[in-house]
Image (cartoon, rainbow, N blue to C red; front, side, top):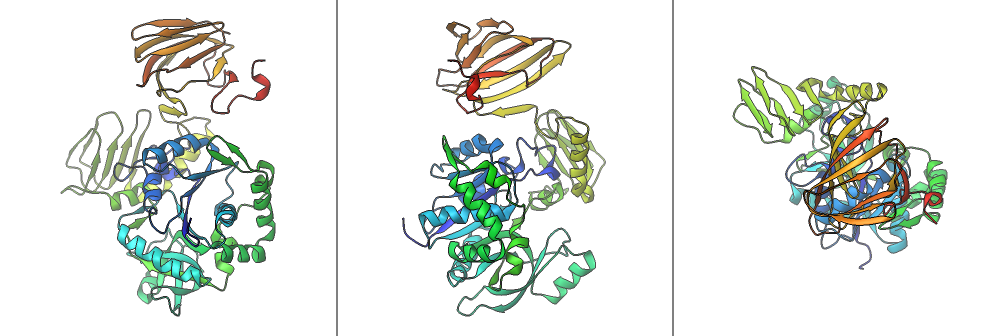
Length: 481
């Protein structure tokens, strides 16, 4: 590999609570196709490929690892390095881990840090800005990307630029970083000029960042070194050492590093950028019809204007309204004024405080082997639709409190039930008694579709004892001897 190339580092730890009910903890916004046909993380990784770029590094939590890996493969990206954090510690430790990993491969390497859930509509402008930032980074600067403001936005931090860097046209020294302002202050920034929205994207050399980290946050850097020292391979993933990383303080890269370095620089850019932080911001960048509406899914309207209306399943009819956000999934509906969408996160907080799971899972729950959906439930029974990917298999498991009936709708199922193993074809079924060790596999080349009927005193997902598992979810002590 050529030395001194740019390593794209994708930070994928957010939950996107302001985009509920579409974005949930188990399937956050970066794993959704909100703008176009590709998911946001697919778009992010794909914009930094090709000549001059190394294979991407993705830093994620362990809950999303299989979905991220699958989405990258679906996008034709097979060489990504996926690093798993045992818990979120904000962007500064994630950046430090990425820098230390890059130093192992290329001490002269540059890092391009990008959140996984931002939209950039102008790829040409993005690449031009990266080229300028790379030149500045090779002089030792730690570069951030400043978005030229189009409105007195109060939801972003700002960057005040100073003089242009010598020999790097288009890059400027940073005079100061500014917290999120009130509207009057933001209006003054626009009138004064030289102020830019802080995009949360950065580009710097591994050596320069490491030097500043050693000066400003030596303890944090030490924890990150230990986490890498005690990291281990888990299939296609790199798991950081848990004890060391959990001891690491949680800090953003802005607070920990960028606001305190003398060599911070900013590259101003207009590239159709949005952090998609709310339904309002998604409406801002989405195509709209003659009435100003963004319409997605099975939707009919009458005298509705300037609204974002989206259905992920049921028919949604909207009559005589304006400036609304209406989002329907299979199990939840959101109705909000467009000006109030920043407060959707408060609804999510309520759901969590009430011990409901609507903030966590969709009706369709994704697993490494496929997905399941609860289609009916009642006293002592539950009916699920299960889809198993070709070649995939569930864990060898048992349940203390329920029995199960499996009916194959399409495909073929290889069933293990205690000491028996047999094949089920379409329209065939079997019974799994309570307490039996069992496993479901798809030996075929097409997805297996199956209906499962559960019956028993308790039907919770935590009534599972795993003995063997392809995906590392079974403790060694529970594996059969």
